[in-house]
Amino acid sequence: MKDLKVPIEKLNYIFELHKVVVDESRVSCFTNAARVFYNQRIVCIVNCVENHFNGNKQSFLHVHSEALMKKHSKFYKSFCKGKGSSCSP
Image (tube, rainbow, N blue to C red; front, side, top):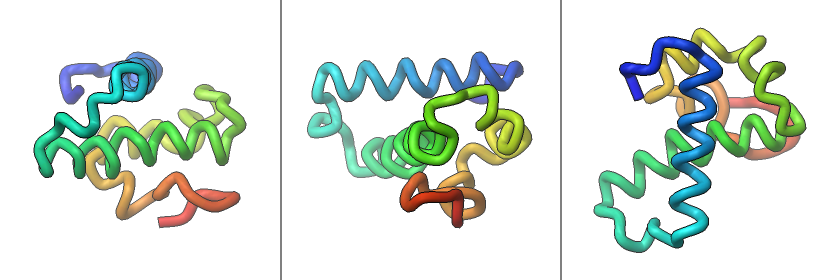
């Protein structure tokens, strides 16, 4: 993911990865580390876009593009867990 340099490309990649995992029910095959990565990086970003920006990726990027590009691994702890009615770390 770190090789993706354009925010919308990175966000689209995250959504594609999430869709593959959900469609193929692959979470149960993950190691513990992979499961943590998926839940704390991928799921929280997807949930934030869907729950806090009504699925609007451009609105999400307007607020969080720098966090997505520079700190996606810390998004869960520093920016949003993807839960509730608004973004909160």
